[in-house]
Image 1 (cartoon, rainbow, N blue to C red):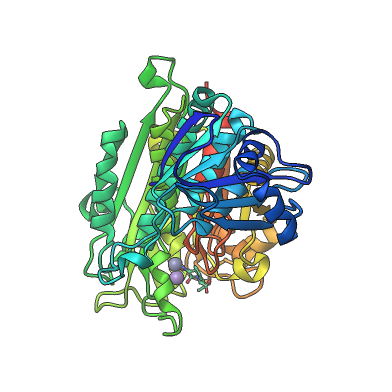
Image 2 (spheres, rainbow, N blue to C red; image 1 turned 30 degrees about the vertical axis):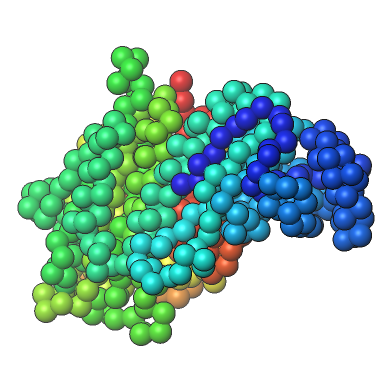
Amino acid sequence: MLDISFAKSALPKSGAVVILAGEGALGGLAAELDTAMQGGLARALEAAGFKGRAGQSAALWAPLPGLTKVLVLGTGPTLDAEKLGGGLVPQLSKEAECTVLADALSAGQAASLAMGATLRSYRFDRYRTTEKAEDKPKLKKLSIATADASAAKAAFAPMKAVAQGVFLTRDLVSEPANILNPAEFADRCKELTKLGLDVDVLGPKEMKKLGFGALLGVAQGSANEPRMVVMRWNGLSGGKKKADKPVCFIGKGVTFDTGGISIKPAGGMEDMKWDMAGAGTVTGLMAALAGRKAKVDAVGIIGLVENMPGDNAQRPGDVVTSASGQTIEVINTDAEGRLVLADVIHYAIEKFDPKFMVDLATLTGAIIIALGHEHAGLFSNDDELAARIAAAGVSTGELAWRMPLGDAYDKQIKSDIADMKNVGGRPGGSITAAQFIQRFVQGKPWAHLDIAGTAWSGKDTATVPKGATAYGVRLLDRLVAEHYEG
Ligand code: BES
Ligand code: MN
Ligand code: ZN
C-alpha cells in the first residue's frame, strides 16, 4: 500500500510535486513555487493552454534543483478530491516520492485525496516474476502538505482501514482458482482473527448435519471440498454495550464456475475465477469494519464451493432438499449461486436472527444485459433498506439500481415435481433468480445485490484500476457507518 503522510504546508525540497489548480491565478504554496521558479510555472501553464478544467493536466520536468517533476491537475469549479487523488497516480508512475500541495483543501478533502490515490495504486503482481524494474510503478511515498495535518491524518485513519478491506477483496477476487479453492479461501479468512474478528469454518460434514442439500449438490462435482465461513465482528456487544441484533452480509463464493454438467462455452470461461466476488466482498467488508473498529455487531457468512462437472456431479433434473426443507428441481446446474445462497441464508436466519441481510452475488449474466457495468442490480423486500443502499451507492460511487420483485415473476420458478425449480427461463432472468433467493428469507428484511456486471472492470477508472473492483466494500461500509453504528 502507498505510504501516505500528512505534513504541514511547505514546499518540498526533493521529489515530484503535484499542484491542484482551478481557473484563477495560482495561490498559496503553488504561488510560492511559481515565485521560486521566477514566474516559470505560470508561464508554462499559459503556454500549455492549461485552463484548470477538471481532467486537464500539465507536466514540467526538473523545474528547480532537487525537484524531479511538477504535475498540475485541473480541479474545475467543484473540486473532487478523491478523483484527483486517483488521477495523479498513473501520471507519477516513474516517481518514487511525491508531495501534493493541498494547502487549499480542508482536512476531509486531503484525506479523500489520500483515499483516491491509495485505491488507484492497487496492483496484483504476485505472479509477475520477469517484469523489469523500470516497468514497475515506482511511486511509494505520497506526502500531502495541508493546513491541518493532524486533522487530515485522523480523517484518513478509518478510510485507510476501508482501503485495506478493498485491497483484500481485490487480492481474493484476482487470485486464480487453482490457488484459491474453498479451503484456501477459508484459510485466508482465518487470518482475519488478527483484526479481532471471530472466524469459524464449517466443512462438508457439518454442512451435511445442517441439511445443506442445495449447497452440497453444487459441491459434489468437484474434488475440492466446500466450506462455509462465519466471520463475526462484535463492535458493540464486545464493547459491553447491550447486544442488539447483528447486521448480516452473505456472499456467493463459487471459486470457479464451469457451469457443471450444464457446462459453459469455452470462450471467456476464465472469468469464472471471479465467481466468488460476493464472498470476497463480504470478507473485505468484515476486515474494513474490524479495521476501523466500527461500533456495530456484524456477521459475514460466505458459502464456498467449486462448480465442476466431475463424475459425481449433480445432473439436470436432480431434486435436492435445502436446509430450509424446501425442495428444488435443478434444471440447470449452471444456476448454482442461488443454490449456495439458499442454504447460507437459511443458516444466517436460524443462527443469528439478523436485523437485516444483504447478500452479494455474481448471480446472472442477465443483469449485465439489463444494467451494463455501471450499476449493480438491487432487489429488496424492504423499501427503507433499499433506499439506504441506493443512497450509499451514490455517495461512494458504487451504484446500485433497484429492480422489481413480484408474484408474477415468482410463478416462473414453479416446478412440476418439487417446491421450485432453479431457473425461470430467459425473461427477467435476474429477477427470477432474486425471487428464488427470496423464498429463503422468511419475510425478514433483506436485500440482494447482483454484482455480475460490477465485480470486474475491463478498464481503468480514477480510483479503480482494471480488474477486480471490490464493488460493495465501500458501499456497505458506508451503509453501516450512516445508519447502524453507535
Ligand atoms: N456465475 C454466473 C453468472 C455470471 C455471468 C457472472 C457472467 C459473471 C459474469 C452464474 O452462475 C450463471 O451461470 N448464471 C446463469 C444462469 C442461467 C443458467 C439461468 C447465466 O446467467 O447464464
Ligand atoms: Mn453458473
Ligand atoms: Zn456462478
